[in-house]
Structures are given as C-alpha cells and as structure tokens.
Image (cartoon, rainbow, N blue to C red; front, side):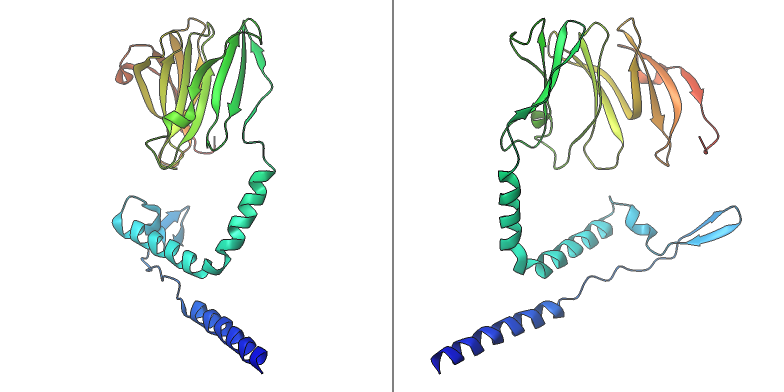
Length: 242
C-alpha cells in the first residue's frame, strides 16, 4: 500500500509539472504592417520591426523569448549538462593545427583548454624556434559578449597583420592593422569592410565595403597613415545582380 501511495504521488507531481509547463504561454510578437514593393509586387512583412536589434522593444521581446525557452526547457537542464560534458570529453581542447610555411615563417593556430577562441602563432626559420603569438583572439574578445574574426592577412614582408572583427553579430567588420615587430595597433581603421588584399609595397592595401544590403559593391585603395576619407574609390558596382 505504501509503495502504491508513493507511485501515486510521483505520477501526480509529473502530471502537475507537465500541465504547468503547458500553461506557459509563448510571447506574442506584435504585428506591424510593413510593405516593400519590388518590380510592381507588394510584399507584406508584419514582423519587419524585429530587424532593428538596437531598439528597446525588440530587445525586450527577445528577452521574453529567452525566458519562455528557459521555462519550457527547464526539465532538460540536467540532460543538457550531461550531453555537454560528454561532448567536451571527446574534444581535444588543447590542440594546434599543422604549421604552414610562408616565406621564412611557419604559421599555425592553437587552442587552450577552457578558452573559446584561437591563438594565432608563428615560428621563424624552424619549427624548433621560439613561438611568437601574433594574435590572441581570447584577449581581444575579453570586453565583448560576442566576437568574430574576419580578415586575417599578413603583409608580404611579414611585418604587418591586417585583421577584422565583428562584435555585434551583424556581419559588419572593422579592420585594424597590427605592427608585428612592435605589437602596436596602428591608427588606420576601416569600418564595414568585406574583403582585403595587400599590395607588394607593404604600405598599400585594397579593400571592398558593403552597402546597406550587406553586399560588397565598392573597391577602395588605402595607404598606411592616410585618412580613410582620402581613400580613392577605384570601382563601384551599380548592378545589384553582381
């Protein structure tokens, strides 16, 4: 009889919990009519307002969505942790890539346990040489909730590194130049960059930028220590099909 009572209590708890979980209502996004006309066709998007991630009402709505997910998935937290722990056991958190020789340097990346991002390194002349860390993304990302590395280009003389980064998840990257001899980050900065290539003089580079639709459509030339506003536009693609 005692065992039967215990089973009844267990099933009652499970039933009550499942019913309370079912009562959790997902947030209801407001409908705001937004019409885009393309080639004579009108496209209606009632949730266009959610694209503006900087607005308070959008952020508030996302928080409600996250809260709903947390409540709905709360009963799986233990399982989530078990799956995560099992996955981590199968990954070599401290690892390195096969070195690639460029010029007189061997370039490679490595990862460290409990660190989220790669560490970019090189050795000069031999794999037995002393390691030089040229970019530790973990340090760059310390002050941000999100960090994604884009362009990573070494100059022809191996003295400069061009790298770009996105800290908002918008896929719009900012370019900086690092002097690998001194460790200094130069004043040169290009925002909204898409792609990049060094010229052979190690002082000039070419880059493309994106338009409002995140499509690269302009090609510029830049010389180090020159103001961005003075960069000559070499080419502009006006046809959105390209």
